[in-house]
Every structure is written in C-alpha cells, then in structure tokens.
Image (cartoon, rainbow, N blue to C red; front, side, top):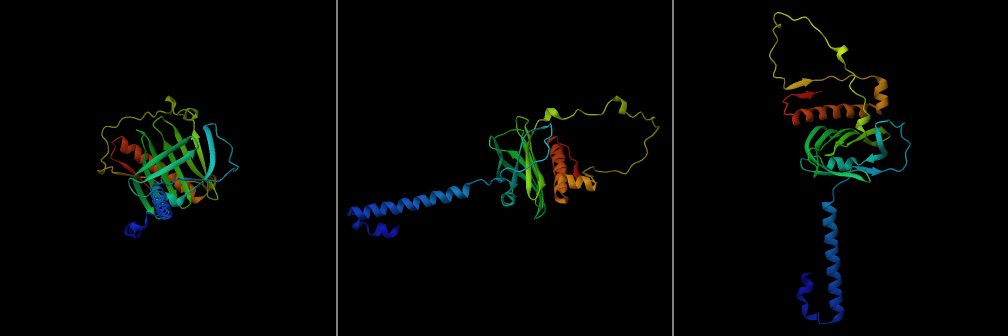
Length: 239
C-alpha cells in the first residue's frame, strides 16, 4: 500500500487508477473473509445423512443421526466460550459455557446456558468419542444427544408429557416405631455425597459401550449438581 501512495504522481493514468482500486478491493475482501472466519462460532454437529436408528420411543417427537465435531468441543473448553447447537434445522441455539470440569483431555463436562434464553441450560458430558447432552430451553423444551455406535450420535426432541407418572404411592410408605433417642452420629459437613454407579454388561451394551455409559453417568451427576446449585443447595454429588 505504501508503494502505491509513494508513486501517486503516476495515478493520472486511467490504467494505473484501475489497477490500484482493484488491488485495494482484493485486500479489503481478504481482510473481511479473515475477520468473518475468526468470529465464526464452532458447530457441535456434522451431518451424516440417512442412518438406520433404533425403534422410536413414544417420548420422542423428532430425531436424527449426526456426528460430533470433537475439535469444536475441545475449542470451547473455556468459560465464556460459545458453541452453536445445530440440533435440528428449525431448532438451533448458541450455548455459552459457564463451567468446565476437566477429568482428562478426552473426558470432561461442559455446563452453561443458551444465549438470550433465561432459565435455560445445557450440560454436555464427553467420554472419549461418546457425548451425552441435555439441552433445556426457556420454553421447557428438552433436547438430548446420546451415543449410538461407530461415532454416530442420535439427536432427539423429547415430549416430556409422555413420561410415565411417579410409581410411588401410599402403599410404599414406611411406618417405623419411634425411638426414645437418636443414636449418636459422627458430624459431617455434607459438602459431598459420594455416589457409586453399578451397571450390568447388558446395560453397557445397550448404551453403546463403556465410553457411552460413562458419559451418561457423568451427565446425570452434572445435571444433579446443577440442580443443587440453582436451588442454592451446598451439597454436591461426587463419583
């Protein structure tokens, strides 16, 4: 650019004027493209086309198969980072990361909210190549991402009205005889509740393998701890 400015005395020629404007236009276009690329929000899902899915549950309104962009997930492992949740063509959000729980480079949990949506949340638990995610919008929508097989994940829009009611009734109440004095107990701050999760080989296979069921376990713990936090409960679950 300095060369063109230093030789401005030659710009009285129409051909040189046209060349200068053309070069400057190309430089401006390049700058715009670079700026746009740098500011682009990474997307969670990669399209895979038609894939045979399992039998549809009555609680599922809509579903599709997709691949996870693990590079994009690793890119947003910082507080304040944004991730485009391109779940369905008509259902897309921008997730803002608030908390990152890093267990290892291939095992971590992201927690945050949906941009512009009050009382929304998202939790994504990653274990190796498997991801388990719950997304809750301000309108009460529930969307889920879970592992199927061979790196393929299923995206589901859930109809929560189809969930069965609580099976606990009056017949399950426990009537214990009162005791004169409670036995002494050791004091506990109740900061952490240690949890052990056991599962059968059949459950692991149904989930899609070891990494898949581990991601679901981490998701359950993270959502429980998020509920405690939002309810201003100091205790946390610990695996």
